[in-house]
Each structure stands twice: as structure tokens, then as C-alpha cells.
Length: 228
Length: 262
Image 1 (cartoon, rainbow over the protein chains, first blue to last red):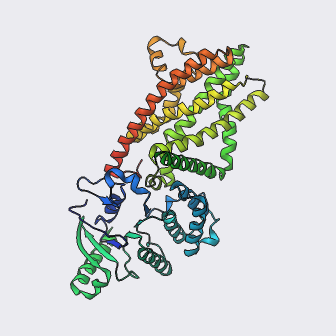
Image 2 (tube, rainbow over the protein chains, first blue to last red; image 1 turned 90 degrees about the vertical axis):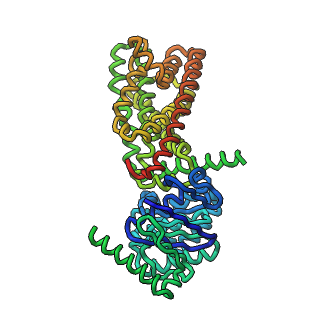
């Protein structure tokens, strides 16, 4: 349940939604992409009223959900990218170029003809990112993609997102993993459906108060997870 | 601009239909199953009819059961099309793409149509090998094409019901058999009491089966097209109501956030 959430995200900004389990991070993300309708309030993205025109918005955004099964496991990585590029009407030639570029960047090119069911969790998560980026979206929404990735993969994904953000792609990511983020990343801390704090990642370490607040919430979050 | 949108949607629909065929290509036994099962299911009806030694009765039952089998495939492929993607885990990805739920169901319909042609080819081949032959005219193929379209419309209506009332999917088999019986798949609906006939004439399959029987037994083109005209009107009504139900269901699911539940 979200309450009085008001959030402005500028073009090209790298925003990370953080907070304990049940804080409302994924709910907020789902509202932003149109999967969930808020009881009240407005959601405006790229000038589209998301409540009404979420399908028009869909062409301009890429979404990565935590569910690894949102790929066709019986098809190869290449076939998946070809299909998803096709659904977004990316012309065939551009689709091939883009798929090659993304698969190369994430080190998946040599395994492009392997079935997704034969991929490891890390490879699938990288492929999910490739899938979300195949149509060159203006905004990338990502839910918990860093979970289950090794340190090198986290660095690789974060640096890619940072680069994308610098290239003008707006990134909105739900994550519990905060290391290796850019100093400029905007941290939005949610607790019990409310925004508790908005701060630049670099400022968190500069201000003791902010750092303590964030640490406390993360500690609560891990205790909660342990009790669960 | 609007023409471009329509063309883009058609391309997406085609790509999704090809995706289904690509996935099915990986399951080789499905193709064997689809070649044999429909024949095994409808053969007992057709061979029982052959005992009468009257070709028109054999034709009546063959076309009735064959088109009923087409409906079965559409009810699973289109009417229950969301469940398949849900189980795969890909439904939310499709929902988040620019393609609408109706367009998505049409992609399922193309895939089902191709599978139904495959089923029909093998079923008729097996019957021919066993001495049961039907005359394959241009009108027969026209009937298959029209059946594909209008059973799709009817299945979209069922998909709307399925999304609005999720438990109705568990009755899929019963509903299919009920529709088969009411549409007169083995006996003409004129044999039914008056009050049952009212229900029969509300079902598109009744007119498609009747059109098939007319063309196989008497080649009466006027009667054939009259049935097609009637089924066109009824099917469009089902499509309009079905699309409205899908929109309503989509809104309710977005309110509850239940895309992954079934």
C-alpha cells in the first residue's frame, strides 16, 4: 500500500528505489509502468497519462521484472531477442545490429544459439536486460535484477546502466544492492508505503544522519527477512 | 499514421504467431499427437455412420465432428490463450508490450488455424485411406477459412469470460462438449425440441456445420452463403461483446494487480 507518494524523475536520471521488504518499491514500479492502477492520484510519464495510455507509453519504455521466466525458455537467446524486437516493430536489420551489440556487451554472444533453459540465472538476467533494451527505450524500469548475480556481473550491469543513463536513458531500478552505484544516482528510500528519504548516492556518505537512517532501515530489512 | 499503426500491429501479431510455431517445433511428439488424436476422437462417430451405408450421413457426421474439433482447438488456443502464457511466465511481458490483449489473441488464432489445417489434412487422409472420401471443393476450403475466422471471434468471447470469471476455464471441456451437442455435430439440430433449438441457433458452430453439410451433400451455394451470412452477424456480436469483456477484465486486473494469478 502506497501513501502520498510524490516523485519526479528527470530525463536521464538514474533512480534507485530502496527500502525494506513490503515497503512498496515494486508496487510503485508496477504503477509507473501501468500494470497496476493506483486508487487515486496521477502518474505521468513522458507526457502520457499512464492510467489511460499505458499501451502508448509501452513503446518508449523497457521493463525488466524479477521473474526469470518472462523469457521463452524453449527458444534460444537470439530467437527471444528477435521476437521481442519484432513485437516492438524494430526493423529486422536494426534488430540484428542491436541484438549483436547487446549480446556482445553482456558476453552472451557466443551462447546466443543456446536455449534459454540451458542458461544460468546470471545469464538469464543479462538476457532480460537485453530484451528490455532491444527497442532502445527512453526509460528503463528494472525490478531486482541484481539479486543472484556475482560481483563481476553486478559491476557489469551497473556500469552499463550508468552509461545508458549518461547517454540519456532514464533508469528506475528497485534494488537492495547499493554498492558500485554512481555518485549521481538518486536514492529513493521507501518505508511502509511512504517516501522517507530522497538523496544523491554520493551525499549518503557525506551526511552522517542520512547514512544512519539508511543503515537503520536496511538493518530492519535484514531482520525482517531473517524472521520471515 | 493510423494505417502504419495497423500494419505495425499486424506485424507484431504475425511475429507472435510464428513464435508459437517455433516453440511447438521443439516438441516433436506434439505434431504426432495432433496428426493422430483428432482422427481417433472422431472416427468412432464417422464409422458408426458408415454402418447406415448412406454417404450423406457419413458426410454430415464427418463435417460436424471435424468443425467441432476446430472449436476445441480454438477454445484451448484462443479462449484459454492467456493461461498458456501465464504458465510459461511470459504473460506480463506481453501485457507490458505495445500489443493489445485482443491482438495477442489474434496471434494465437493464427497459430491455431495453422494447427487446425494440419489436423484436417491428416484426419481426411486417414479417412481416405480407410475408404471414407469427401468431395473437396473450393467451397469446402472457403468454409474452413470462414470457420477459422468466426470461431476465433467466438473464442475471444470465451477468452473474455475466462478472464472475467477465472474459474470458468475449469469447465472448458464441458463447455466444448455442450456446444458440440447443441450445434448438432452428430445430428441435425432440427431433431431437438424447440427450446433447445433456440440455444443451438445462438451458436456460430451450428451455422458452420450446416453450411458444411449443404456443400457436401447438395452443393446448394445459395443456402451455403445464407448460412455464412447468418454466422457473420452472430459472430461479430460475439466479438464485440468479447472485446468489451476483455477491456473490463483488463481494467479489473490492473486494479488488483493480478496478472500472474489464475
